[in-house]
Length: 264
Length: 247
Image (cartoon, rainbow over all chains, first blue to last red; front, side):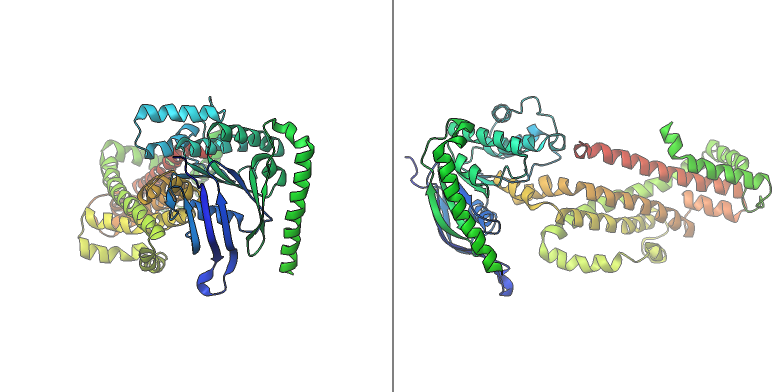
């Protein structure tokens, strides 16, 4: 049976430095229901707690208040069911591309041949065939992030968490990576939570976009993108794309302005 | 050729030494000329005395250093990952670190006798702290996204420690080991000065006492050369092991 829930976030609040009583409230009363195989973007000004929410879903940071659950049950610790890709790639620098991709596969109960086959498959998926024996330090940022994506996808997680994955790349590479990610997502159906502060990126990639406010982080709007973006880069020139982007920009800007006022 | 150029200052010092003794700037009783040192070296080498004593010394240094490395890495990793261990061990490390370990020579002699064991224990004590401290710093400095990545790929806590934290800390650990290597030579020679029946430090002390200055200098230069060689070799090993850092 097809699961009815991708990720369910209920009444989640989170404060940093809460132990000394003067904590900073990073998230307040977050409710969010992400459908299975949905591509969901978390968009907001910096400091809105969008990465914190992602880390909570990943199980990397313990949930203080509220609950987070996936089809597998309540989230309490990191699990291969929920893979993550970080902005700064987080590759094991002492491992080659192949060894990085194999790392998660070695934790599964697979025979050697199957592991090697899957590593090859995912290296090919991210167009890195021929670079298997290169170390991360020998690769460009874009290639490093492809390796990280292959490493995460190779263990076949149901949920893919992405923390501004293209934020450290140059504009050209970022565009290429966005298109490739879309193509990959269409081939390998997964629930994706994608953190970004780039409105165009969110509109180009996501089916739904949660717009967050800053300090304390709340979800202010959830927007359905609702038009077909399969034409690739050309989509960005269409009227619907431009109008929706501008609309979202306005909403984000309001949050950013409110955040600045709050700080003053 | 580039290597020769890099070590040119050493050749200059040797040339100055030779000149100073040849033209009587210093008394040959204080500093023997290089030719006599060379001759004494050859004699010590062919008689087997030098090789035997250097071998004894290096054996002690190696065992002490190896034990310090093994224990030091484990202790450093435990300190970095287990809070109670950190709270217990950290003050001890801080208190013990600045203390000159050579001050322990008499104590160690009383406790562990005059044989190999006392020297090995002393070298172990001198070498373990740099390894502990560097492992601890290296392990604490590991980027948390590496740990998180491994955890989300299915690694257990133990696997994270040995497969992520340890290799990520390795560059720092090597630096600590290199410091420890230098300490091991210092403690090796100084403990053999005080009381020993063989070893390069013993040889230097007895030759000095007996007034055989040329032979004594030959031994000193040998220790310096072997220490230098060991450090270079270790540097080479580090560079090979950490090849992944080079673009």
